[in-house]
Length: 438
Ligand code: EPZ
View 1 (cartoon, protein in one colour):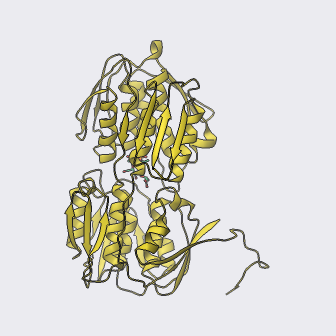
View 2 (spheres, protein in one colour):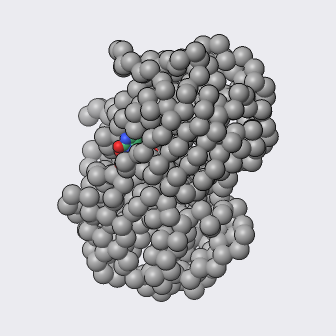
View 3 (cartoon, protein in one colour):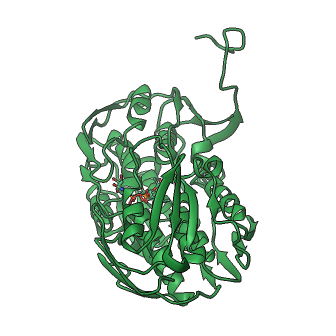
């Protein structure tokens, strides 16, 4: 099993380059299934989730080729002859559930495993299923699988209002609706940039969609979509992660460059909160420059759907509060219990407590290295961030969680000045194998 060994205190001078978006690449891969031919996606990050989803796609028939160095993925979906997404693969990555919409949209039927549990949650899929029914699908649940069928092989179309607004359900319903017999309307739809870029790719493929980026999306079904070449967007969560990292670990007064991102995808809430910490920041089309302040102001945040503060950045913000002078809070209104990182941060000496869906952090205390355990993707990166500003050595265990969503993180951080190494370890130590029982 892999871990990161981090020795804190080294200044983060940068640059920190931003890669392709995980949460846009995955729906783009599902969209490729809708077209009879070869779709090419560029700026696709070399991540475990991309490899996992490639295998999920292959089960249904397509030939999928990924060139990790070129960050290029080609999907030949001329043969989709097995509309199934098996549990053994779906359980590894929740976004595999996009196969429901993709297979209904292409084949008019689907047998897709329910995603199962997550490190935090519950993360239901009721909106995905109720929406498909509203669009005309018949849905049965058998042995942990969603069995979907459609009248004469196509959805009819329909209207569905989702509550709460769901990124995944919006994506799944669009995948089905674009080839429906009639028109469809999604109300309270997700507005995230990931969804907008995915919808624009569908438009390039011939889909008739209006209202992307608003709460109401209208679709007029078409008979078939065409394969395309499409560029994936930069990862907005990696951009936000690196901006926070620069603010806490960069040398005060020295600009840290973060190239390759699209700051417009962060949403105004994050940018407003970030500037209120006292960090200096300038934006150009493909470069964000952060100038760390002498002292960080503890700004309390509340997450929300786009353009609100992204829930995927709340764990990282907790570490910023730990480095700030004073007390701040992080409230997650999207998920109720996405705080599995707090007990691990406490092991580093961070004074943080959770009450309901709010974490309270008393910043400014000493952060001291220890062994800590990753539990999910964004929690893991918050542990590495804290380790980078801790006194002494920190071992961050189970970094496979990180490999799901951050490409070559340790290489990027090493090049930017931090002391971080990847090492292997035995997860199941015994009294005999413990190197240092202390
Ligand atoms: C996407 O997950 C992202 N994943 C998540 O990022 C992100 O945290 C989340 O959106 C919110 O922005 C991908 O894009 C692959 P939702 P998703 O459906 O689609 C409730 C990461 O770290 N809900 O928008 O699963 C749900 O419980 C990952 O990259 C229902 O009630 O999120 C939550 O409270 C983690 N019923 C809210 O909606 C449903 O059927 C938002 O969830 C579906 C969702």
